[in-house]
Length: 640
Image 1 (cartoon, one colour):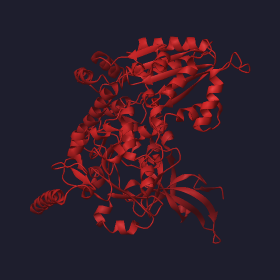
Image 2: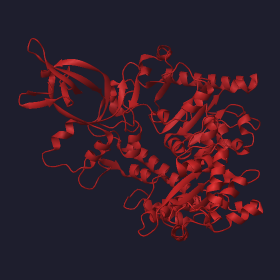
Image 3: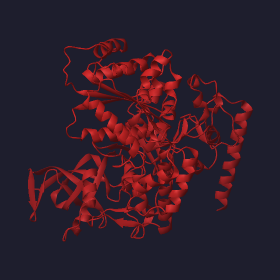
Image 4: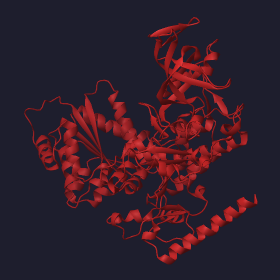
């Protein structure tokens, strides 16, 4: 049957239903897969079950919503009489709308049977697979899906909706550097200058137009250009134009810009050499075939510094095409180097110097104004706290991304402190109310070693371990690097702070909280390591990825903004990309305190593959210290 009626209530295939459990207090939810009547006249239903977090191997984690369920992969046949009534299991986006919707009179009862499902759960492997379009399990914390706090911490959304958000969660969301605010305060002068220049260029067919924009990192250069282009796109009466954007940092070589530009213009792929020839033919000479009203192309070259070559031919060609006056091309170059034109050859300098816009570092008053603008209507920060942050950052760099990050972390810390002060939500109890341990363990494994891994844990430990299959037998170095740079892996991370450790790593002592302010930290690299050749700045940071602490949101931002190229070392990619998305990479000194690999340090938090680099005496010193420390911990536990 497609539908049946039981005591006046109709049930259809595809409905979510509540099913009688083995005990009176047990609530079980399932989806109706099929309905039929047996030869004996018994009405039956095939049901696909949902698991609650407590029924999974990982237990309830901090990122789980109070109404979280997971779709199972198996079904069971049950008598229709076992169905108690209808339930409503929503996808994440629909659930957000339901939370925000006003509660109509008489609808209070639906709160008890409404749930959200973002992932499928495989009981055999313990693996969670996000459903199409769903967020990761940890994203609820970033989007306001945390369990409601007690009344002192919660603020009702306008309209009487069901959602209750901590003001600090909302502040942290708004202070994310990539939150894309609707306004860009304190850059009105620069935006107007850019808008005027681009409007003139587009109206004039783009011919002979190039802009050079410079400023230190975090001064709003790229954001201001994007904002100006959005305003022009919405402007009536302006000729049509389109924007092509190339980030020099994403290119495997500077010359690759030719292929990307040709593909963006024509949709056709061409080799670097062929693309250069075609572009030169297209832009360098007047064409009788080209229409006078052809669509203007605005080419945005971000991270222009990365296009500098020994002969400087790439930058010269691009700006020469833009200033030749033969093609509808307007070029915008963005660089973190204030004096880049002066450091180039005279023939290149003459092209970059057509029109320049400089972005100065933000002052403390501007930083304070930007933070206040983002937090409009939200009582989360004392004005003195914002002022202190603004003055500290302005004195060092004037980088607005750093100021936003400092305030975002402060909001997260404030929320944790208030949660501890208030305690668990009212009505909670038992182990779930007490909350999970501070750190959960996720093990990504091959197709043949799951049972071996599970046997390495005691039964009570398995409650806090989640196993995720990679669906391969083993990994090569290349496939490992690629895996660490996939959305597939990072979307499955169950928390914002992720400690990655390979099997040749070891935690030496307590103290990880010391490093929580870093978005990426690992052991520092030695000066003579292969991947540091030609990149001396890599030796100034703590970058080794084998044993590293990372921010999930910043990692995903790197993948979205910078793009991983096959063949790169994953840790080098993240170290170079983090500053571009407002992330903080640890200094060399911090890295030495965090981990030891090829560079010796006293009393590190952990180490990775140190036996490959250190002397036998140094390894013995580390291992002796670990033995003493864990003997002290064991003795203290025995006394308790």
